[in-house]
Length: 386
Image (cartoon, rainbow, N blue to C red; front, top):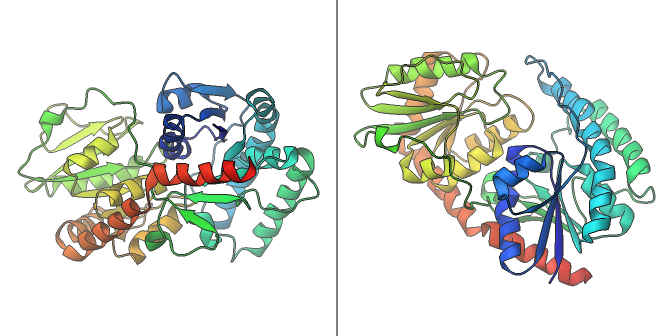
């Protein structure tokens, strides 16, 4: 049997897709371990009995909410991705020396995994938890692209193999993408495996009895990393949904506690978190979200159309994929009004084309194979280099 070391950033959206893959490998008898700056987070998502090596991390910093476009991308690289790689590198190397992996599985934004494997001559696979990089988001930003290339070269000289020139976001051995070409478009050398829909620790206490079978269900969520900017948008959603309370019941995820809604409200349920997969499976009719890759793919997996309001990073690209596929409607996060949001919500709830497209994409995502398909590819890589 082989040993696989997963190198992940301390971000829920980057850990969750790999949880099912790691569990599938372990079920086949392989040894699996993780490296992450937040071992407790990995344990919470993957199970308390998993092996996790800690390492240093980097603060994400206070990113100004108004940053968009090239400046937002440069901020992400300069203030988080590159410092994260530098901080993680010693811990990743120590974990490799202790665990002795046959294959390193490096998140696309955890460059320390790729560079460490490169320096030590180990085969490595890229775990692409978003498909945005395959569209080359820096193509129209030559100055930013040159700056990123120079910074990566400096990082490679410090922790990688200076003789190589491989982009740490794209392994020459294997790139696993948790989406499907039918949504994200074609990309050379990518193995599309669809979302890794696997069992997750339950979120106890959700009031399932609150759901009204006589009304459509709408889930509103902005993910786990947008608490600081979501207040206005959630308030707009609340207003639009109130106007449709005779036919729509809504669950709004509000981790920051910005909304004031009575606990006995029969139309709107405001909670800090939800068991998202279980809720989608129970019959959500539409999702309003930030176009986070995991949320989008999980909604489409269940054939649920979306209203997407991208905020930053890869979200505009993913939102474009949803709209191009016909599976949803895009609104402007910072400027949408309740009437415009309501019109978008009406479209995805009542125009059959969006639901049909969501069902078609969902079929493609399921056919891609998910966690078992990803484990197959990693199995093959280990055997090739074994």
